[in-house]
Amino acid sequence: MRKNLKLALPLLASGLLLNFANTKLWIFLICISIVPLFVFINNNSQKKSLKIGFLFGLGTGIGMFFWMIKGISHYTGNGYFYGILIATISSVFLGFYFAILSWVTKVIWTANVKSNRFLILNKLCIAAVWTILESGLAYLLQSFPLHYFRIGFPFVSNIFTIQLTSIAGLSILSFISVLINLFLAEFVIQKKKIYLIYGFLSLVLIFIIGVICFYTYKPNLVGKSFKVAIVSDNMNPETKWNNENGNALANNYFQLCKDATDLKPDFIIWPETAIPWTYSADDDLLKEIIKISSKHTITNVIGINNENSTDKKLYNSVFYISDQNKIEGIYNKQILLKGIEEPLGNFLVPFLSEQGFVMSKGKNEKPIQTRFGKVGNLICNEVVVENCGIEHTQNGANFLFNFSNDGWFKDNYISELHFYYARLQAVENRKDISVANNCGVNGIISSNGEIITQKKDTINTIVSGTIQPNNNLSLFTQVPFFFNLILIVFILFYLTYLRSKTIRIDRHGNF
Image 1 (cartoon, one colour):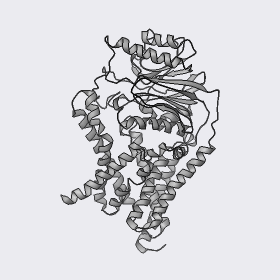
Image 2 (cartoon, helix red, strand yellow; image 1 turned 90 degrees about the horizontal axis):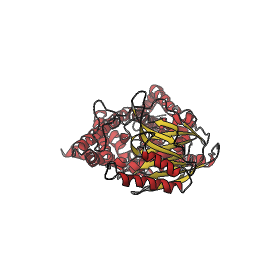
Image 3 (tube, helix red, strand yellow; image 1 turned 180 degrees about the horizontal axis):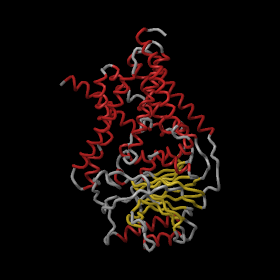
């Protein structure tokens, strides 16, 4: 029993440390948070590596999903049952994921290699495997953004290191993060300073490359810049429109619109489901909003559900409505939240504020043409999915708009991470992006990753700024899978040819 606790407690604590580094976006902490796991893997058998990885992943999951116990139970009104159930399942899932990672790591790991060159190749292979498996998990979890876990994500908080994503996406940051941890683990195991130097040089190298990318990047401007006013009333998701509060809520919207109109923007951008019912051309609330802003040539971009009269399906949509109350474009969300917007099997989380609507997926949605160029739209979790921004940019988007509602988790780490995923999309695709987020961070981010403005508040929020359309296509946008493809080729080459040489050196001690 004591022996099991001696193994479990440091692994659970290390997993919590990894989660803390990831959710707080601490770069230096993410560079050491996996070191304990690698040391444990090195010192134990292949069979035991499964248990080691599971405990580490369980610790990570507990830190990552603990908020669900209170959050989900609060918003479903079903006590703590749903919260505990979903948090437990989610943590166990992450435990199994790290169990697989740890087992594969142990299989590949070659210890006590006297040739530094072959040790580096061995560690490069392990880092590549972690990166490929992480990319695969990210693909599977596109509809589960709350479970999205990318080890290299803290590096997006730095203006220089995020620049590497325009070359190879988030994968390159995860690869380097794991590699640094591997070098530091070898330093702990072998007590050789050379591996500490390797880890430090890896970190310095990505900063140097990032600085070069940042200062050499030049946007290929198209058309003229324009002004946006982002508005959010930061309404609690528990609030329902009814006869008692309807007028007060409507007047609040009207005041937001008036204040935004006074700024003379070209677009007033509202969050996801800003109007919590289905669109109608005769909607009195919408008519008044358009009337207020009609004294200037302003397009209102507003989140509202859309029922298609042809197929009778309901969509989570964004409407572009002119100052003449004409629809200039509609975007329907393409990647729905499993268990919330569309059933997971037969299961839907029974949120108190929902009316039982089941959404349908938008298909083949393209950027919307405006008088300033084409705009790519990302609703809620779509900003987390790298491929969404890529598709819009490849289809000609000159800038991006993101619409979200973080009311369900406004008091935890997710809201800030949501904003930094928008920053990632801006740099990966080299497009200015505006973020309209109810109860979250609202802001504008330029295509080089600079945060022009941002604000998070509990009361009415207005953020304004300028967006410049461009025609840039980053290397990552053009060939998004090339880095992962290189890693796969390297893994195969290492395992089929180089690893046998490494093992011989490990056994015979000569090069």
